[in-house]
Length: 388
Image (tube, rainbow, N blue to C red; front, side):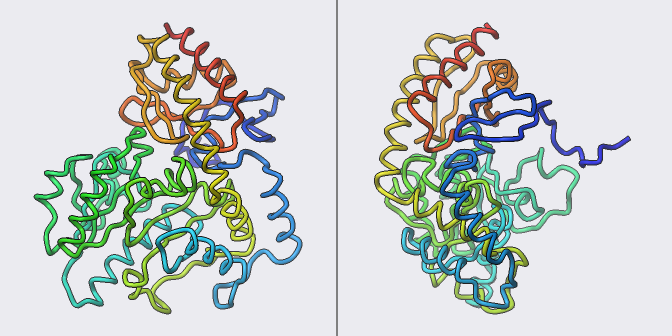
């Protein structure tokens, strides 16, 4: 008999009833050190007091109104996003997948209004842009697309990091190039800053739009508010989600005015997107994360964590091959199946996340303490020793 919850996940036999910062507390009272953060979502940890206060205050006022009306909380969040980024405008969504769908629509509408037949969007192998039919078409990943055809046409997938392939593929008929500055599901693979600058230049040369997916690598995760800032470039359109809500369902599409010009009244909408509850939390996340002092601490902790992980790799060469990533978006390249390390971590009351390319993802809360970093590495050490 089928489960009452559609069985689309292979769930671990653990349930959590409470969270405190970097710790998730199971129904049996066991405390787990959480290096997954709900897959880069809980950027300020579990039950963060500032976010609880923002949510509780708003919950006592009004939860939902239609986008048929002005929503001050949505306007406040949009103001903060525009203030701290390249963008001129923002559309608030509920998730990264919704953000991806709007980004694709925005690209198509832009070229339609230009009177040009440009629909092809170039993407890269290993990408993850969500699980809607449009998003999986963009990824081109066989595992994701199998059985769901026919898919949305107009996407062409190139080898990850292969600029020669991009130079050959891009043309004056290309609508956009879409990529993650740091691939998450693809195995914590950062794109070099020089490559990102070259991609921006190629888009400019051919008039194509540049769409960045910072759903996983954004919101301070890499030590900058958004990862593309390291390269000193800006996209035309960017997808944001996960960390922006600190655990509350929230996403956004940010865009320059020119790229967004076609999205006039009636071209897109959302029943729940931009609701007062989500936007109150998102604004508080922005107020905390988008500060120089907070991001400086992320970088300091990232350097400490990485140094200790290098020592872990040296101590367990049969289990780990190396460390990669940026900021507190780190990956341990494994010599064994990363799922084996995840399961060994459960025995040490440690939560981690597997990824492609034989990689173990480490995505702790951005406010994890030095002591918790030391404890995390100690538990990883014991987990690796149990596999040796």
